[in-house]
Amino acid sequence: MAKRGVLIVTGGSRGIGAATCRLAAARGFAVVVNYAANEAAATALAGEIEAGGGRALAVRADVGSEPDVLALFEAADRFGPLAGLVNNAGVVDAPARVEAMSLDRLDRMFRINLTGSFLCAREAILRLSLERGGPGGTIVNVSSAAAKLGGAGSYVDYAAAKGAIDTMTVGLAREVADVGIRVCAVRPGIIDTEIHASGGWATRVAEVGASLPMGRAGTADEVAQAILWLLSDEASYSTGAILDVSGARAILP
Image (cartoon, rainbow, N blue to C red):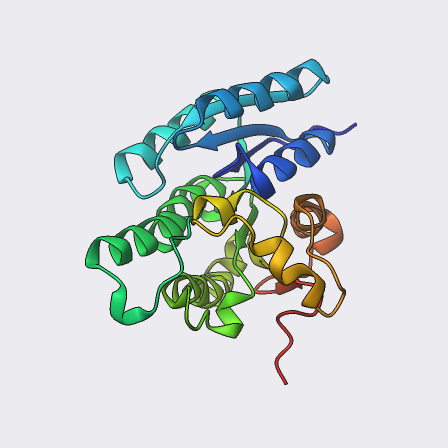
């Protein structure tokens, strides 16, 4: 199996991030499993990958903190040459209407879901850009079907942050296309992961899944497969692309 260099997966200890780490390691990447709080899960995942013959390193960093992001990339530099970045770290909050949203909630939502992706993309570009002596590479952002649907009545703030991720993906792709960097995104729909419980709506998948066009929620592995395709040479002429992985949830009338 060909070695692919280092892939940083932010929010890599659970859900879509963990599935991406496992699949990336199986495809030859050395994986940096980033986590903000769940050290046990990140360390266990890195150990699992190593036990299976891959290379993995768990690194704590809050992507909304610039010093933490710098430390994350410095740790990755020591692990090996960077090949790509998956901007997956994200949060939701309890369902709420906009008039009930506090400044603290909004600051957290945009700092982690949006500013963190910009900070990580910046550091990745500095290492990957051909004009800076880098090898080129790929950035994959994790957006959400909420970016198209709006999250009315529950997650307008989250949807707005993910809408900005879509815009960032297109703009950044155009900006760095000539320096050997591709930038794409996946736009998951209702996926069966822990993120719903972390936002206080643990029953969301069970409540919504059966009403989706495909009659079920998606899995983290299904999203990871799309991410790894975008990272692969098979997607070599795809940049600025946003791939829906939503079981038709994100298709507007």
